[in-house]
Structures are given as structure tokens and as C-alpha cells.
Image 1 (cartoon, rainbow, N blue to C red):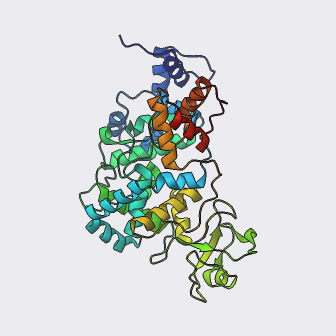
Image 2 (cartoon, rainbow, N blue to C red):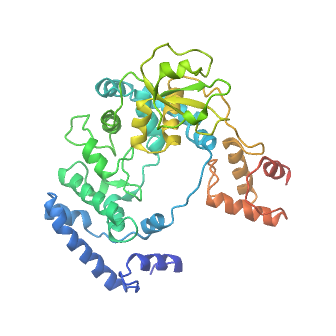
Amino acid sequence: MARFSTRCLFAAALVVSSMSGVLATPGVARANFDQFLERLWPEAQRAGISRTTFNAAFRGVTPDPEVIEHAENQAEFKTPIWDYIDLRVSDTRIQNGRNMLNQFGREAAAIETRFGVPRSILVSIWGMETNYGSHMGEKYVIRSLATLAYQGRRTKFGRQQLIAALKILQRGDIPPNAMTGSWAGAMGFTQFIPTTYNAYAVDWTGDGRRDIWRSVPDALASTGNYLRKSGWTPGLPWGWEVALPQGFNTKLAGLGTRKTVGDWAKMGVVLANGSKFKSGSPVKASLILPAGAEGPAFLVTQNFRAILRYNNSQAYALAVGHLADRIDGQPTFVAAWPRPKDSLTVRDKMELQVLLNAKGYDTGGVDGNIGPQTLKALEKFQQDAGLTSDGEPTARLLKYLRQDG
């Protein structure tokens, strides 16, 4: 008989507990979940789902304790913008993006022609979302969404996405055993949630299936369709790094303020390399300062806003645009990020993780991302070494690790 940890048993009990908070026995838990599915059936039927599809989708499905744990305990970490960009626009990801463009260049060029979204942007989103397909998620999407719909803080989202996922199965785009994704139901090479999939997914290959799980062209075309319908304007860049004149009124920064590029130029805004914009340019753009007045400045266009529809994070949209530019052979940003004096680069953080692991302090991997596992390892090392146990990954601490042993 398999053995389970106390933590796993407790997590499972939380998933299957009744609304009154009384922990249910396994038999009662199964009955409760079955009742949930039977209450769901009329809604699915009204949405056009057959009983055959419904039964096949939920065959053997039980709530997933890991999904509840993720949903209820999402860590809130504020990653500095320079670390975010360094991690996501790495030399490896840039080169891999170029390799993917070489591999799928013909299809990507045709998709660009059809939707007006540059192939480098499409490949950049692919790289950002799943590292070109290496991290697509392995959970059964129906089980994940059923768990979210059944219990927790995201029941409305879970139910909406679950019905949408059943529609995908009903249409026959993917069989249930291949419908995998993240714990929250994001799917495929470019991580569409089911409602987004139903609205924008494209069968580029013409095989009768919109297969974003196994067909890169389908996934890239679906992304191009989504961006175009989100307001992408063909021929317009996502934005430009700029330099501001001395004494510039930074209160004008923010997506809420739009001016023509010509108007920004009249105020002394120039490209970061010192070149001037064409006078009288009618293109509308907003000024953003993602690291404050001391960091790089950018004028961003409607196409930046289209990327925000994909993920409503300025750091994400900036990383997508910059990765695309680097894949196209453009240089890195001109202005330096205002990194704290004693802070570490991503390469330094990776070295820190290597050194901690070598000393027996498990960081959970070497990725340059200082997450909970690395912080725990760092604090334990500091305690054992008689240092202040603050978990701060500083240049001073890295130097100490290099010298110690």
C-alpha cells in the first residue's frame, strides 16, 4: 500500500471537505464531487456538450490537491525589472529564438503576412510562455479546472474555463489524454486558457484541428490572430528606448497619457542612441519609466498595449518586445538599470546557487531566480556560518561563498 505524508493527507482532506468545513471521509468526498459533476452537467449540456464527451472528460477524475495548494498559496514576489528582463531575455533564449525562427521560418513568415504581427514577436511570446515548448505543463486541464470550479477562491473562473475546455473536447481539436497544461488551465506552446483558445485559436495547418499542443504553426498563428484582434497595428513597432532631456517632467509618464511621437520630440525626447524622431510623426505613444526616473525610458505604441492584452504586466510586455528585438539582431538597452550597489546579476545568482548546492544547501535548481527554496538554503547557510540570517543575496555574500571552502 502506498504511503502518504501527513501534509498530503491534509491537503487532500481540504479539497474534499464539505462547505460546512467538516472534513469528509474518502467515500463522502467522492460522493460530494460526483454531486458537483451532476450539477455541472445541465450547464455543460446547454453549452452543446454531449453526455459522451462529458463522461469521457471526467472519467476517473478526482480533485487535485496540488491545484488547490497552488491556488491558495500563490507567492507574491516583487522581482526587480532588471532581474525580470535578465532572466527572460537571456543569451540562451535569444539564440534559441533565432534557432526556432530558422526551423519554422517559412511558416512564421506566412503567419506574419496573414496577421501582420512580426514573426520575432510571435517567437518571443513562445519563448516567454513555455521556453519554446520545454515548460508547457503536464497536468490534465479538465482535472485542474474541475478542481478550481469545485472549491477555493477561483470557482467562477474555474467553472467558466471548464465549460470552455469541454467545448474544445466536443469539437475534437484534442483528445482528453493530450489536453495538458498548467495548474490554472493554460495550454499549449503559447499558453492559451480555454476561453481565449475558443475565441482565437487557428487551424493553420488545415488538418481540421486547432492543435496548439503539438503544432507550432497552429500555436504561432493562434497567437498572431489574438494579437491582431487585440489591436496590433501592422508595420508599427512596439516602442523605442528613448532619452529624456534634463529637467523633463516625469509626471507625463504612464500609459494614461498619449501624445504623438512628434509632440514628444518637440519636448526634447530622442532615441536612446541620440538620434531624433521624424518631426511631425502622428504615431500615438505613451512614455513609461519601468524602473523610475533613474532607469531606461521608453515610448510605447498601441502594439505594446496589444501585448498587454496577452499578459497585463508592463514588465512582461517590455520583455516580449525586447526579446523580439534581440532575436532580430538589435542591441540591448542603452541606459543602465538602477541596480542597488551590492545587488547581483542573474549570472551571479546562478553562481550563488551552484556554490550553495555544492555545500549541501539545496536551492531547488540553478536558474538565477531567488525563490523560496533558494532563500531557505541561503538562510540556513548563513545560520550555520554564524552570519546574519537575513536571506539577502548580496555581492558580499557571494564573495564569502567563493572564499569559504
